Every structure is written in structure tokens, then in C-alpha cells.
Image (cartoon, rainbow, N blue to C red; front, top):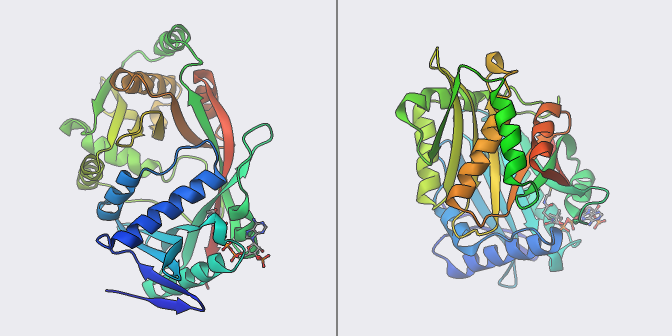
Amino acid sequence: MVRCVSISDIEILPIDPLDRDLVNGWIGTQRAVAAHDLPGEPLPSPSFQRLRLLLWSAAVDVERYVARREGAVIGALQYSMPNRDNQHLIELELEVHPEHRRGGVGTALLEFTERRAAELGRDTILAFATESLEGGPRFDHSGREFAKARGYAVVDQEIHRRNDLTLVGDDELGRLYAEAWENAAGYELVQWVNECPDELVDGMAMLNERMYTDPPMGEDLDIRPAVYDAARIRNTEWTAIERGQTQFNSAIVHVESGELAGMSNICLLPGEELHAWQQDTIVEEKHRGHRLGMILKIANQRLLRRYRPQIRYVHTWNAEVNDHMIAINEAMGYRPLCRDLDVQKKLS
Ligand SMILES: CC(C)(COP(=O)(O)OP(=O)(O)OC[C@H]1O[C@@H](n2cnc3c(N)ncnc32)[C@H](O)[C@@H]1OP(=O)(O)O)[C@@H](O)C(=O)NCCC(=O)NCCS
């Protein structure tokens, strides 16, 4: 379906992956936004953005649009919409080229989004904005101010930390790792790259569901329990592999019961030589208190370094109240970079 909407002098149109000018304009806009707003942080890779246009997990529906003025792309929208659970939600990425801001383009794109949400039967829009921290790099606050002006409330916030892997040496990590294992008799470590062993896939589905209920979350953030099964885990893995991503995974098994007690994963994007992205880390409730979180994080960082010794930075996000996870991250060398805000609007 081709939709083309005209709002005063801008057109909002869906991205056709075969339309070279639109795709180039979309990628150029995203790179200009990142360079302007988050100086020093990695820019979106053109080749990976092209893969993202074609491949995403079966558990989400995705729509992407650009805003065009006089033939040039000046803004972009992406909607990620879970289809197995959380069917009330649109996760929105909205960007306006830095040279075209404060002229109402962002507002026009947001109004388009709210109309589209109503058509799609979704009543919650969740977006993301960045806030600098005292003593940290100065990042742009347009997203935060725009959200406030447009009636989006801050419903959750996380500190984005970055680990410079050159700063905490192997000896110190080895000491922390050995100390942690002293508390973890009866557990064993399992590691893999990309595809989980068959005997762990149901446990991975269970822990993925727990990621939606266990970590601390803002009270008004309307994220509801998720539904995972083995097929969803396999499809997520397949999508990542097809996009050329590498997923490093560590898990802990409780030997006596065979249960999966915890897991942690790091994602590496194709062609990226410096930065990797921490994803989930979770220890199942009844297995907490054995330092499994520390074991998982250190073991997985070591796995990443074995495969990609040149990677220098790993990024992670934690709720400010998640003291336990933060203590582990700080011990490993993670330091605050900025605050990421979740901004949400409930449509009536
Ligand atoms: C946020 C963003 C989309 C705004 O785009 P835009 O086209 O400049 O938005 P608008 O011109 O419609 O701004 C609407 C209102 O938001 C507020 N606003 C937007 N940027 C602001 C800024 N830098 N400082 C203060 N207020 C700002 C103002 O109230 C503005 O109205 P005004 O210009 O009449 O004062 C753009 O800055 C951007 O792409 N930022 C990076 C991506 C991002 O943070 N997205 C998250 C959005 S929740």
C-alpha cells in the first residue's frame, strides 16, 4: 500500500526499499541527526540500515516513513509494533534533520503518527530522548524539549553506561570472576554465539518473558507482559544472523535441576569495529544471591573479546534504582554516559 500525505509543504511517504533516493535520504538524515545530537557516538552504518529495511523479527510489525520537502528527505519516522503481546503500543523513532528543525516538521510527523496510531488501533505511543549528565558529554536536548512541548510525559529513565574495555585489566576481572564463583557452587556456565542449544531454548523463552516483568520500570510506563516461545527465540536469532549481527551469549544452568538460571547477551553489528551493545541480563528469581549476574557479565565480555579483540566499548542501560546491576557494571568498568528518557502519550 502506498500512502502519500501532504502537510503544507512537506510530504510524508512510506520508504520503498527499492527507491534509491528515499533510502539514501533516510540514511543521510539519520547520520546527520546522530552526528549533531550525540557527538562522539557511533553513526548508523549505511549497510546495516539497508538490512534493517528488509529484515525484522516476526513478533513486530514495522512501518517506516520519510518527510520530504522539495525532493529532499528532511525527517524520518519508524514505528515498531509488537504483534504477539503489547498490541496497544507503538514504539516511535522520530527524527528531523538538524538543518530543518524548529519549523514544525517534528510536530507534523507526530500528528501523522497519532492519526496512524488511531487507524492501527493502538493507543500508546512510546518514544525516546536523551539528556546529558553533569560531567558527561554535552548531547542535544531537542528530543526532551519537543516531547515536553507535545504532551509526552517522562515515564521511565535509564542511565546509559559505556565500558571502555581498556581500563579494567584482565587481572582485576579475573579476581572478580573467581570471587563470584565461590558463591555459585552447583551452577555451570554455557556459552554460544548466535544460536542457543536446543535444550536451553524453552528456558531462554521464559527468561525473555521475565525481562518484561522483573527489571524495575516506571509505574506509568505502559509495557505489558510479553509472550515468548521457542519459535520466537529461533526467529529472533534467525533475523539477527540474516542481518549479519553477531550475538554473544552466556547462560548459567543449575546443574541439579537442569534449569536455566540466568543469561546475558551482547550484540555486535556487522562491520562495527569499536562498539558493541549489551542487551538483556537476567537471573531468575529463585537463583538470585549467588553472584550469577557478575559471572554472566564477565564471562560474556570475555567471549566477545575472544572473537573480536579490537572492540573497545560496550554500552548498557540500567534503571537508576537497579542498584545490584549497576554495582556489577561499575565494578567491570562501566561509567555513565547520559540519561535516556522514555516519553509516552496515551491517546484517548
Ligand atoms: C525532537 C525533534 C524531532 C523536533 O523536531 P522539530 O521539527 O524541530 O520540531 P518542531 O519544530 O515541531 O518543534 C515543536 C516544539 O517543540 C519544542 N522544541 C523542539 N526542539 C526544541 C529545542 N531544541 N529546545 C526547546 N524546545 C524545543 C518547542 O516548543 C517547539 O515549538 P517552537 O519552535 O514553536 O518553540 C528533532 O529535534 C530531532 O530530530 N531530535 C532528535 C531525535 C529525537 O530526539 N527524537 C525524539 C522525539 S520524542
